[in-house]
Length: 344
Picture 1 (cartoon, helix red, strand yellow):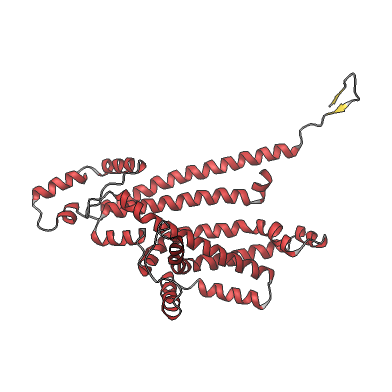
Picture 2: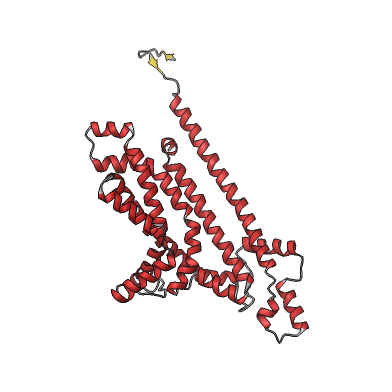
């Protein structure tokens, strides 16, 4: 379209290009995907909460027997059952529990009377520290070895990384933990073999006590991440745009990290996301091996005591952590994918 002004030459105004429309459509599509992921997360949380509560109710545990012991009178049993609400219908108890959980009230321990949320708040930083450290170690080990194997494909380095990945993927976390304790706790005493020091006391001691449990918990995830990253990076390095970049004289590091790696990262990140439930579940055994007072230890002790409200609360919080992590990972994957980057 041409606009003519009295004091100037004709000015040509170009119509909106197709690129703007495609970008708008991509942004809308990303928003729709994010909304769908959040909606699915809500459904999963509600379903998981129901299953968690139903399993606790089906366990047949008696709060009166847990709190009062075998010498309790029938009157005491009836009074305590009414206090804990176990004499009400199942769905009424579930709705009450779910409403309380939505506001942070997960009930009270049958054994100690301490609010479940308070016990979880004490143990949660330990488990979150361990899970975050294990994820970081998996990214460092798996990312470095995967990139190195892809860049040196076909060489002895590639074969050594593949062999190490196959071996690490078969080692259970508790076996790796025991081996690390024997090696770096006694043979070469570099790290503490148990316990937990919060960062508010000493950041150095906090980081030191996380090294061995984080490494033992991360080996499986690191091996899978390395394999997936190598496969994706090898495929990306054979693409035509990489060949063109080499012909234009771009350096090897720039080609790998700026052009090939972003396209190969999405499947590797998805693989790491699949390990989040394993990291949360594996913390139960790892915390027991290293004597860490996290959610794993809290769950184990409460389950042995028959303390159903605590077990239910820990399970629900664990599911929430896994679901929130999955939502964040899906959003990140949408951003790092080629379509997501073009819409940004």
